[in-house]
Length: 260
Image 1 (cartoon, rainbow, N blue to C red):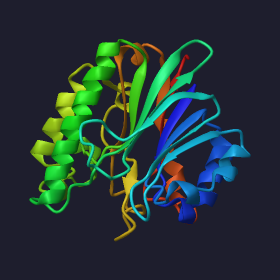
Image 2: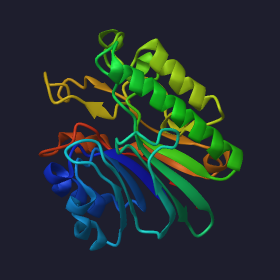
Image 3: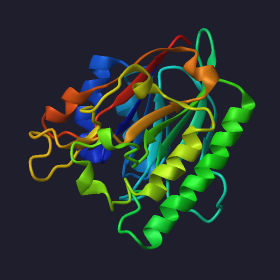
């Protein structure tokens, strides 16, 4: 079972790039971020025609997450628990029942948090507290589960080509990294980093200042797995080459393959 996460930066602008990649890579499950579309406006037929079940949690012009799955989905829920007044579409989860195991797949789009300080950063940190509570519940269930998406967190200096440029950014501030560590230290395994170490591996390159051409990137898309899920891991990687294609997203897919 291959599960990928992909911030597509707008389904209207990126549907051709997304469908081309799906036809090539044929992942079993994909969690999408920044679809930037209400549910009714999402082009479901593009994906259903390719054999995917489609569930969205949309929002007009901003945010929005979705799950595409070739395997039937069970118990689909949307919205991160902990704040009934939060209207931002940033969380979706479902159970994918494979041939060998059932996996709870959670797709997330964590708040950016800039500018710092300010209400957007306060929201980021409070959202991460809610994420930690959901992560604790996933761990307590002692079942295969993962949380995949755009975390908007540079978790260590080697995950940025120019870490000094990010020191006071919401993505790399000490408080942000500490909040991420509190979640990871519950017992989660970072899929990509379990397979690949060292600097120079990124999942995002800005559209400005020739960031892609200079490989001035950051690694902010992560897949965190419970121990029961990590036991099923076969491989993990980043689809870097997609960033160099026509009309790309500023992110590329990150994936994990499970023996499920």
